[in-house]
Length: 92
Image (cartoon, rainbow, N blue to C red; front, side, top):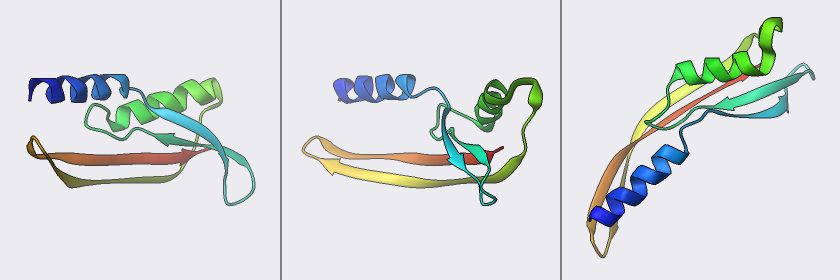
């Protein structure tokens, strides 16, 4: 049990940054898809990443989505549950 908690803690710690990838918006212009999903992240980290990418030019949020849910898994060591938090936005 302690080993599983340790592994989950390490995964959560390593995933502690918002990620971004280039994309194209509906009007054909270049933009960025920013993902800050997970319980260790928040919307502020999405906006911080947008600021890092665009700097003093500024940015426009074209789309923003977020939802929460629950996840339950079972294995030989028992039943485990947790929450799932998804956050993402597209900027240009």
